[in-house]
Image 1 (tube, rainbow, N blue to C red):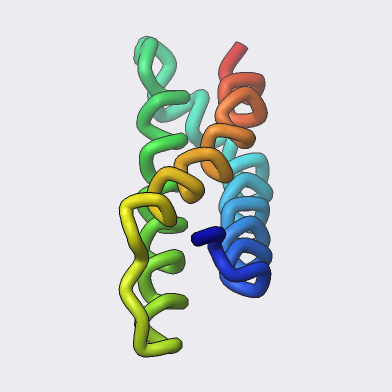
Image 2: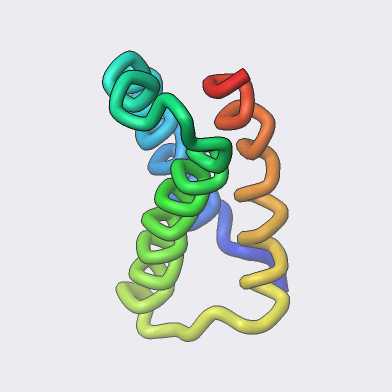
Length: 90
């Protein structure tokens, strides 16, 4: 079963919003954590963790549960944004 299109769209909009906010705070992040090598991993984890909450909530509002396949599809959505986050810190 594929993720419903409206859920996928909502999750992607949320991820893009979080990336936009990261870009806004990037000068602060780089000053606050100048010696950290894993800031990109941390930021990505925060963004995707937040998106996962949105993802599960979208299913809950439909009175449904995501399947294992839905979570796999969520992972495919999330990984598309990994390089974009990495570029902030290179």
